[in-house]
Length: 251
Image (tube, rainbow, N blue to C red):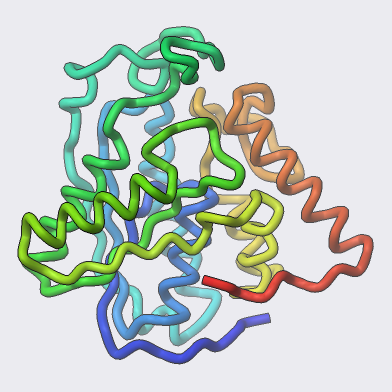
């Protein structure tokens, strides 16, 4: 199924990592905006394989819907290797993953990562006269990262609008959705074809592993990101088996 939404005669920028959430958000943006650009970041992430995956998702998504192919604009990859200098985390080094690290946060938390992403996205968008920025952050099913929370995103919207004297809107279509509902939204937007693309080509695993294929995609299956994705897919699959309809888009 391909759901049609009222088209906004404006451009949007999707902060696009190549993971499940940002792939779903890319489809969400392509369903709404006249022109959609993508922006990624190379920050020395342990799972750098996502940088290749993001390009395969971009290529694959254009084959699913001719309108999406027309609307998808260029991609940009920015170098933010500074994160390696700022903090030693399990996402930017070979440090073993600890879900109960300092300050009660998992040691996969990269301090300020999403805040920096938003700041750089706003700066990039400013030059292109783009005022809609789409983010795949989520507070319902997340890893405890404070910069994924709704109040953090709203605060950043105020900050970039004030600091750049602009009127940005930061869209977070997954903010209050569970991982199951994120899969449901993907199905609503692009049917089984989009779900299959996300399963096959998007990347979530913190360890960067893509050797083993599971029903939900590729990964080690044991890191927090894989477990969250797997649980969400299992709940989604069960919902389909039970005959539940796709959750209507509320964003």
